[in-house]
Image (cartoon, rainbow, N blue to C red; front, side, top):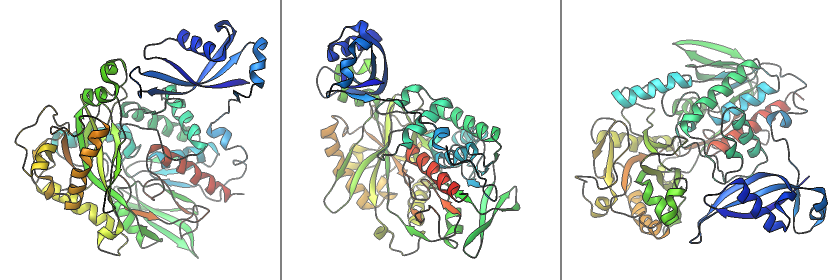
Length: 529
């Protein structure tokens, strides 16, 4: 049994001895009385001029200090085994009638399949894109030659869209499974620091290895993983799933099953169209906007002042609600990151952002998004949101009739003129950019909201509203434009067909999607009991 001790503050540059001394000062015991400590949470307190690291710790002390354990001032801490194996105790005794199928290998799909595999269910995993190594080749070809593989790209392929992101693992949701997901990430290759960092991230260079390791684990436990294989139909009998139809290399195959988790991601538009004729779906709010880039050193200096070089690149999170009901906020902020070409359909432009684990790029970037409501679609069609996204992606492409992304300095957008040069912020979009007026590829109310939000954000982070801040368009895929409705058993209107993750409208990032994937698998396992 250990004591949980909060608010242990140490200088930016510190050692284990410094932490032990801070513990001894807080507990009023000698450092020699400290047997060990475990980091529960680590964060940066930059509110004061003298920036500190702040720890929450589980501390073990010598028995002679046992009075501390009964003190009302300190709570006891007992380590828990937050692993999938532990979660599954009691779930893996009976087999499902047919091998379960998981469609998609993003966070929701991977963790659903891993859960089922650990439960002995030998899942069949279907992924329309390529394995992560082949997928990288397709992405590189698009970046260098503008040749888009519409089935394997930033959106589609092993690991899902999250593989090519900052790998951010903080979430606004609360679930005991969050620790489970973090521990599983560590097991398959992530740094242990993600289990206690207040703002954990992995980085795309590490994520590609982790997703391959999880896939290999699923296979070692009896599962099968099929790449370049797309779900094209679902069949039902008396309201219950009876089979799915997949297609690979133009050949269709029917797989009999009564249990399938569909974790297709937020960009599988053709699959949405197929499902719209099969299950109950609804329009859903989402957001669109731009990628905004600043020099990372300017963002870090604004938050950490002269101590910024001693600290990791600073992230940020910004939001404001404006008159008229629109909101503007940052999303998927990538410290030391890059804007990426994320199109999944020909003749369209989609931006996203990613960082490597070291976050050592020159620029910081983030999506700067404006809220969109179903009333903006001007249509009752369940897929109207898809068409709304597609319209502005194609307008962005039409500016240069190429995959070069439209860019504009914030100062020039304010003045209503096309940029003729860049300031101190240079674009990182890999295919190339074209100077344009972003009003030609975004709704006017989105432009107006961005222009109103920037001065407000500048008050929170000095320099954020610099005229040299660079806007790259368009960002349209922050979340799914539809929700596939499910009941209390996680089932869609076809019993046994379980929608999961971001694409189904039930998650908003790597962590919440992974948690939803685990919960989807657990509900599916309940059918066997």
